[in-house]
Image 1 (cartoon, one colour):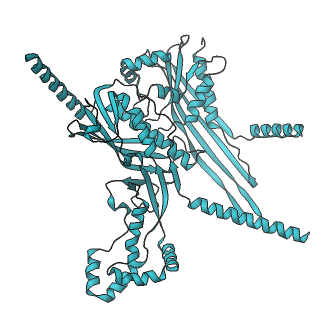
Image 2: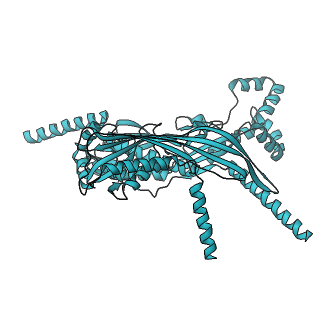
Length: 327
Length: 221
């Protein structure tokens, strides 16, 4: 009887320890969102523009993944590195000269990790309002020694050692916080929403001149420039929001840029109640993509640069007609 | 065994019916004219989400749509998603008309007018508003240990809902009816080992009141 009781107590303890571990692991897990591509985007109800448009979706665009990392507190990172690689820190000093090898390895590792990722978080230090932009190549880098530090290091070996000791500590260790695989969904949106906007549209496999169909007037290349999101943690509302910023680069048949149309799009979940973070961000992203489609389909024909090009094209055709008539 | 299950279900039903907080709903109505829904014509119930702050909950919108679509004066109702898909991209948060004259401009486009005609649409019911958490008091503390888990305390909070409904006849220049509804509900959560939530159903209460009022507008439907 006593033995049975002690066994059940042990089992109980194991269960509660397991539950606590699960809770802790759950707290530390990153949000990994594969945007649902099963949802169809409706065909826009617009008067097609009198243009034969080529649509080119790059592999970079189709495979786009947004990743955001968060920093682990310095002390924890330092403790881990001391335990794991105590020898490397010492041997790294002479080989690198000014900065430790570990520090040099770190950005490489991050670069390799995010090789498929075009955009990375701007190091938000745990803030929930996140912004990732292509224009910020510094975003994924770890602090590098400044020129001043390099000069000092070459002049004084003692100061070098001190400097190296400081820098050899892995000051930033990063953990994946948010991952949004948007590529497939945004490519699907482009393929569904854009063609009905034009009288004739062709999906291009490449931008090579020989692969373009005859009579193609323009071609558009969508590029994603920015993804931002907010969660209820930062806004203190029950709303998840997503901002997407696209550049629709429209070229004419001579490969000259007609316009670089910057299109911001916005989506939000009206209520985060009873929804997981993943579900809420999923529906916000879907809304943002729909918004992009709406903005493009209603805005293309009235875009000033497109209108100018159309007027020019009309005049050119009239001139050609005039010449053929005179002949 | 079956009797026991039925008994448990009955107890649960009574328990859930009794365990709700208090809700007070006030409805104000302004009706310009008599609203006559023509036979074979339909209604669309849509939520306003044109700004970051405008976050009409889909629950309220779909609830009103469902309530209007059933009962004595049932009319054909388009759900928000179906309507937005059929008239994409003209009823997205970015493009949806805020005024009737903007809708008229929109309907002047033959492609949209044709689709609206196919749908047999006569009225659009716009729902704008939200339910926000008001004052809260009390506190509950829970703990988990080797011996088990439990909570102790008492919490209470208020939910305030403010909604405005505008009924547009797509053939007229002014809204045919405007309703406003406000509701306050107080929820309680006593906790002795297990927390027992007594939730005030503010949104459901507003939905029921507004749907009843809208249904009364279409007596001959």
